[in-house]
Image 1 (tube, rainbow, N blue to C red):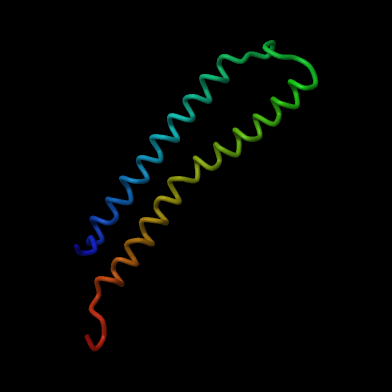
Image 2: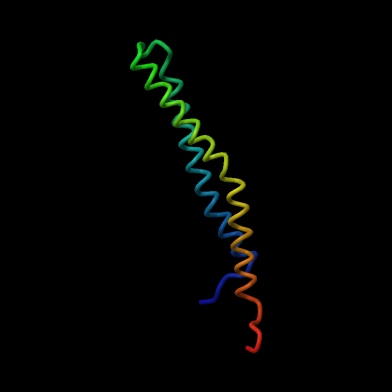
Length: 94
């Protein structure tokens, strides 16, 4: 079993990252559905405010993580292709 060439490796990486993006989209959809169900009058008071602030902070962090995926995908694919090129190049004296 050989090591895949650079183009195939890039394609395999992108397929894996696409699976992650599909899952992230499903999570975003679920979060939106929950937010749509929970109105301002669902739960009121100090405890509700604290919980809501915490929830929004966590959802913001999750959103930033999801938004970082495209750049990370490109970085990982590029890195994998460089390593593949190094592995595929002839070794000196070999």
